[in-house]
Length: 258
Ligand SMILES: NC(=O)c1ccc[n+]([C@@H]2O[C@H](COP(=O)([O-])OP(=O)(O)OC[C@H]3O[C@@H](n4cnc5c(N)ncnc54)[C@H](O)[C@@H]3O)[C@@H](O)[C@H]2O)c1
Image (cartoon, rainbow, N blue to C red):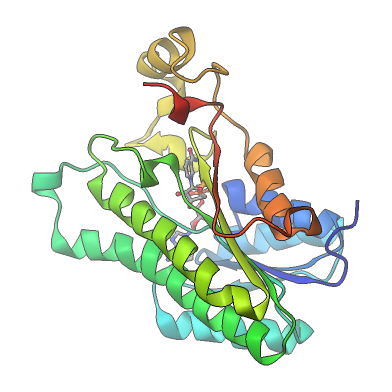
């Protein structure tokens, strides 16, 4: 399939994990991919991988928690290909912390990344889509934590909940301009984000017993980055033209159990 030939697709946090898998999938289907990520080394490595696949990829060092950095991203993406068709808001951070011990500084940093970062990326990318009258798609990578409470991560859960509302509200406001906004809500996916405090939570006895053996995840396994990337691409593609403001769980059924 070549669903994204000559389209420009920006993926934040596109140098690792779900973002990298998504960037590779779009590149394989003809897109010019823009990787927007903070780390120079990971960005350069990801760019090499994308160049081997095809399209006209570029890495733009970006801190999405900084509005000026996001404006620079959008300006440089436009200089590169002259258009933006798809914005994937994927970058985020996760760490464990007790609610009572969390600091205001760290709480704000999480919101600046997950909520404000997606806000700035959506706003400036949509501005280009509207002015050039080309429409487009925005896909927000949320989490099942956006609508379920997980212990020791109020900062992340609350930010993902806010991101889900941003998805619905921008889906409503941008629809008259031909822009579709949707989200994915991954469950447990095997990436660097699963390593908490130096321990990969997917390899712990707790995960194996509770989520796998007791089938709290009905499919009894963690998901792969490609299983999330394929849903992100679907939401950006012509196969989903009547989906607007939806947040699709990609969690092996975890969120249907209790
Ligand atoms: N892995 C999981 O189990 C899981 C579950 C639910 C949701 N998610 C979501 O999937 C998305 C991707 O996470 P992942 O699992 O691939 O982890 P990851 O750590 O590989 O990816 C996150 C990326 O975001 C980048 N990033 C963080 N802050 C940034 C900033 N301020 N500016 C630019 N880039 C920044 C990081 O450098 C990294 O490349 C995240 O939104 C995460 O919340 C992951």
